[in-house]
Length: 285
Image (cartoon, rainbow, N blue to C red; front, side, top):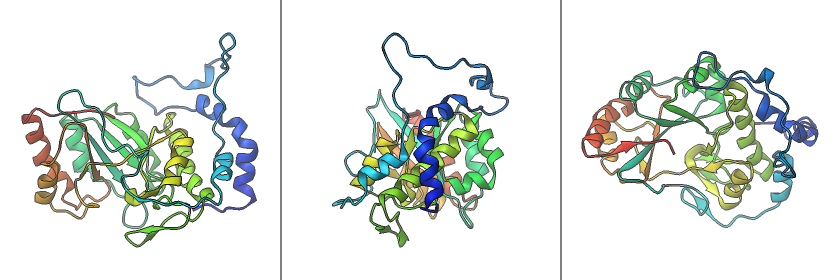
């Protein structure tokens, strides 16, 4: 959680004007030949003709715009949350969350090794606490083109503007807290990898409709799911395999990558070849 005092608001009160500089001036992970060079020799961006670049995102302005809002909806599948995509043939997307915090900052290396060995692209939703536990690990993942890194929040909270909870986990309690649950980790991923995350998934995947709009105004797409693959990394391998058998074209699976003793890796090792044999292909979103 952040301290909702002068320091952060001051940073974004004047720092919003610097946001575009951050977006164009960060380094990328070392050793990835497919990524741009470190941006220390890139000329300043200049407008082409009369077309001006878009203004930088102002988190403080987004928070102020939604202060005092009274949401009416709550859940994992609200308007504005992307839970499927228009598929070309039998395309399917895999996503894995790394939730972070006490007991949740490990990595399921067997799962990562499986995805690499099978050349399966996946979107990895990383919580800031998981990132901060081992930043070099994040940079290694970012250097692999199979993986797109996405935003799983700062403190892994349900995204609310009124403190609503899910699974007994208290959500963010205000528009300001919701903004920084998204933005703090957005900036952390950008700092480490040189790439701003495109997608966000709240802790527990729950939102209210105001929080959904906040995510979108901050430049990310709230992502849901069609297949709950491992039930928060509590499922055994057979349960994971059975859940994945419900995959349909254009669907999105939600699994977890921070509990190596779970059944996720073994279940995926059985499920993914079977889906390929049935004609499915795995794609980035």
